[in-house]
Length: 217
Image 1 (cartoon, helix red, strand yellow):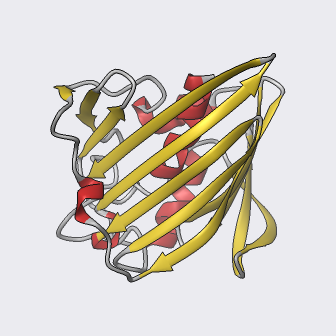
Image 2 (image 1 turned 90 degrees about the vertical axis):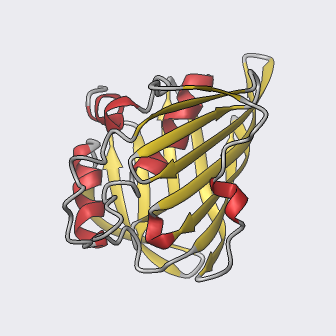
Image 3 (image 1 turned 60 degrees about the vertical axis):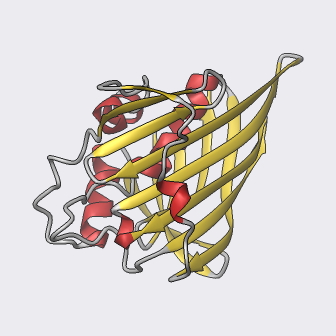
């Protein structure tokens, strides 16, 4: 179940990481942001996303409780993305996996068209535009559908996901969006008391999730 949660958690990061060149890019049309999400279904919990420098720096933190087949498991995940480098924080084992952002090189020469890049990212991950729209917190979202479910996109951000994996339905929806606000810089830092394991990205992140989302039937 932890692997499945990592897949969904990483999707929110990967969708907004497809344009990453410090000198010439624009992942989002806003410089900073804090987006809070609520997770419902068999997996309940929270996810908070921090954005700075138009998305060059991103920090995602998630705490969940999953109940399935009479068993309950708690998970706490953190991922920091700074340009070409990604840090996956493992709070349980007190370690940090440091690796290469798998989509950095592909889109490093982007012209900063966040809308175009977002659509290219969704297509690469095996999703297609349904032509339908939905509203989250008053924001009109495009609804994209893939093998695992639906993702609602607004200004390059995934504001909602409805997925079903191994018969288990999970939903994540934005509950608060704060744009162009002051973001705590420690959200983009790796905990100093943790062991850093270099040149490794946890299973589920490699390849920009192309295989996980585009290859499953």
